[in-house]
Length: 286
Image 1 (cartoon, rainbow, N blue to C red):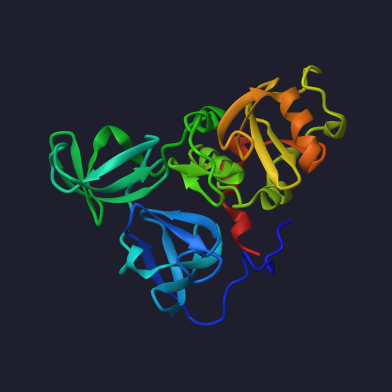
Image 2: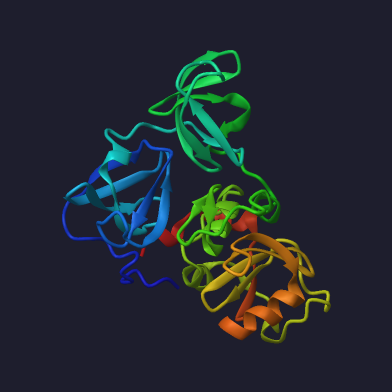
C-alpha cells in the first residue's frame, strides 16, 4: 500500500486554488528555483492545486497522481477548462492558426489533455489555450489502448531524463506511467510507489529466469529504484541511465548488468488491464 504521509504525496496545509497547465508541459521541482531538482512533469491540460506562491513559482499538487512540487506560475492558467480529448500521437504541434505552415505555440506529448472548442478547419481542431491540433492525433478521453508494452515502445530512443514523462525525455517510472495510462490504468509516479501498488506478484520471481516460460509481454519488472516492462518473455524495455535513453535489450543481459548497481530483481508484476480499469485510480484516496 502507498504511504500518503510520504512527502511526495502528502497534501500541503491551506486551501488550494485550482489551476490548469496551459504550457505544453511544465516541470514540477523539489524547490522553487530554476535549477531545482525536477521530480516530475505535468502535461498540458492537467489540473494542479496551488497552495502558495514564492517568487515566480507555485507550490502545487497534481490532481492526476497527488505528486507535489514547485512549478512556474507562467505555465498555469485559470479557470480550469473541461478537457475533451487527449493526444494519442507520440508528439504533435499546437499551431497558432488553422494552418500547418503557421508557427506552433508548443509541442504536445502523448497523454496531454486538450479542451476542443468544436471548431474545425480541414483536419485541424481548435483547442482552447493550445491552438490548432491535427485531428488524427487526438482521441476522446475514454479511448484506451490495449498494449502498454507497445505504447512504451513508441518512446524507443527518447532521451533519459530524471523526472521526465513526455516524449522529449522520460525516466523509468515516467515511461511506465505514460504507457499504462494510455491503456486506462493510472500508476503512481515513482517506481517504489508502483511496486507498492501495481499488479499481482508472479510466483517465484525472486529466482526468475527469462527462459522459464512464465513471463508475458506487458509484465512489469521491479528493481530497487528501477522499473521496466517486458516486450516479450526475454526482452526488456526501459528508460535507463546506462543507455541514457529508452532502450530495448535482452532481459538476461539487463538482469546481469543492473544487479551490479541496483541488486537483483525484486519482483515481476502482472497487471490486469480490464480489472484495473474498472477500479479506476482508487489509490489516489488514502
